[in-house]
Image 1 (cartoon, one colour):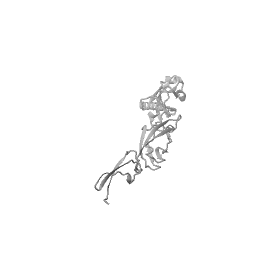
Image 2 (spheres, one colour):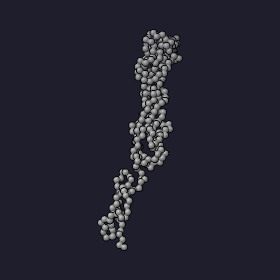
Image 3 (cartoon, rainbow, N blue to C red):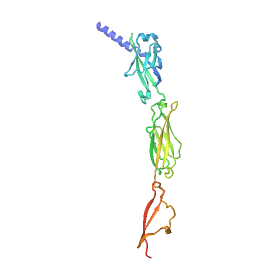
Length: 278
């Protein structure tokens, strides 16, 4: 008989603990709400008189965490924000962000699970890994050549993440963006003799409201190609050659000419020939 009583009380206790399963509450609200902001009304949602919360020592317990993100105002039954809720810090880039808290009521004991769905707000701007991207391209590169650019990242999710890219208008490059692949496309061939360096401005934009953006400068260094033949500064004829230090049958002629390569000031070469006796 005593055993039956113990089992009865144990079952009653378990029933009380499980009571309220149908009264579990779910709230959805944006991240970064100020402390004290109202999430919902516990008393109203549970059909309780406001005074019952105080009489039954209502309180919020955390579920596996040390932080209490919400609390109860026992005077009016409102569930309020108790601490900063940063969605990115809590859930990273997950599509959904859910926090679990528990409402405890005594006399009789009841537990109600509170599920908090944290909505993302557009509080982060797209960012590139570097402030400056350096690229070296040979001037002999063909039109249509592609150069991969590292994508921007945004801590926000969904529409608030990076949605599009734009490249400031320039003479040589256009932008090709396909998903997470960003490429510079050479639209007009390069000429180092005209322009050794090119600065491009790439912008990443998210889809939030208001829209946020991030920029990066792409510095293109045009590498030289051997596409120009050396030229003399003026026409040279046999009469212009000054035969210096002619001895016996040989004469050493030193000629200077300037090429079009801007990184070489001048080239010196020696030409030796024989003066035939006849």
